[in-house]
Image (cartoon, rainbow, N blue to C red; front, top):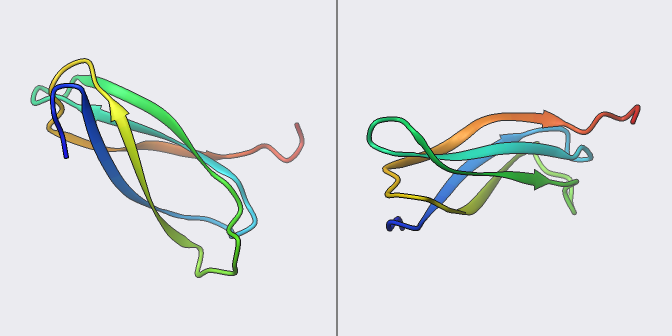
Length: 80
């Protein structure tokens, strides 16, 4: 559901079940301007999975969003 202040974005991530990844989720206006974004952290899976999991993130927006999606994802750096 979207309104002038929020949008819900559903997406899937394929990763090693033991890995932690971060995904930049964004909301776009009708002229493709970014009107909201957040970094979603997807941690290790509780159970062995096929590697693809579904996620739902609610974003606050500064104006009406007409679409949302994942801009990019990256894994934690194991050497940090």
